[in-house]
Length: 382
Image 1 (tube, rainbow, N blue to C red):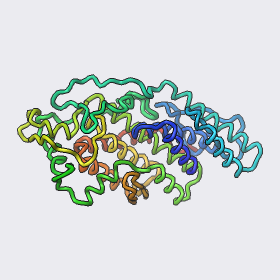
Image 2 (cartoon, rainbow, N blue to C red):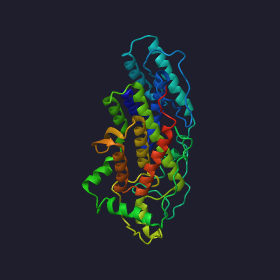
Image 3 (cartoon, rainbow, N blue to C red):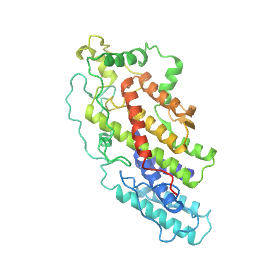
Image 4 (cartoon, rainbow, N blue to C red):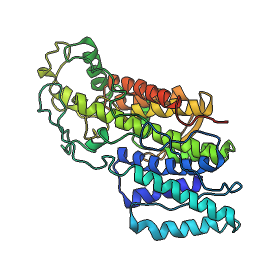
C-alpha cells in the first residue's frame, strides 16, 4: 500500500505536472479509489465516493478471503506500461487463484467508479478573476507578475464537502481597521528579504514549509505503527481528501474576497486609508509570493484540515509525523497536531507572503471542515 502511494505520486508528477495545489487533488483521487477498494472487501470503515456528500456502494459479487486489491487506472496513457509493470511485480508476490483474481477485479471496479464520478468535476476550467485593481484588491505580484494560478481549484467539485463555499469564512479585516494594520506590520518587521527582525530559526521555519513530502510522512507513520491494509488506506484517504477540500475552500475564499498580498499592500500602503500603515516602496518578501490572493492561506487551511482529520482518525492529538521538506531537505518530527499548525501559521507570516489573519482563519477553517467530514466519513462500522 505504502509502495503504491509512492508510485502513484511519482506518476502524477511525471505525467500530469500539476501545480502545488493541484497535486493534492490527484493524490486524493488515487487514495480514495484505493480506500474504497480495500474497505469494500475488508469492511471496517465507511466508504466515500470522492464526489462530495455521498457514499459509494459497489461491492464484489463474491467476497474472497482477504485478497489484495490492485488496478492501474490513469488518465495519462503514457504511464500505462510503467504502471502495468509495477502491478505485475506486485501480483507476483501473491498466490494465484480466485482470491487474487477477484481482488484485482474489485480494485478495477473501485478505480473506474472514481474516474467516472469525477468526470466533469471542473478540473482545468477557465475561471476568471474579475476584480479591477484598487486598494486592498489582489493583482499579479513581483517578480513574475503572473495571473491568478489554478483559479479553477476554487470552483472544482469537492470530494467530501457539499460545495466549495460550504465553509467560506467571514471577510478579512477592513483596510482601515487596527487589525489590518497589525497584519501589515508583521510581514514588514519579520517577513522581508532584507532588514528583517527574524531569527535564524524563524527563517528556517519559513523556508521549510515551502513544500513538504506529506505522502512519505503518512506512509512512515503507518509502517512504524504497524497499520494493516485497511488502517493504512484510511489514513491516506482521510488525509488527502481533507487537504484537497481545504485547498478548494481556500481558493473559493481567494476568488470571493480577492485580497492583495503583503508585497502589494506594503508598497502601496499610502493608498489604503489607514493612518497606522506606512508605504515601503521597494519591500520584498523572504519567499516568492505565489500567484493568488492572500485570504485564505491555502497552506494554513490544509494544515488545520490535515491535523484535525489525523487526530480524529488516530484518536489522539499525538500525530507522531516525521516530515521532510522537499525544498530544504530538512526533516522535522511533529509529535502533536498543534505544533504543526503553529509552525504552518508562523511560516507563512515570517516568509512575508501572507498576513497572520489569512493564516489563522485558514487554520480554523480547515479544522472546521475536517471536523464536519469526520462525522460522516472514515468512521468505523460493525
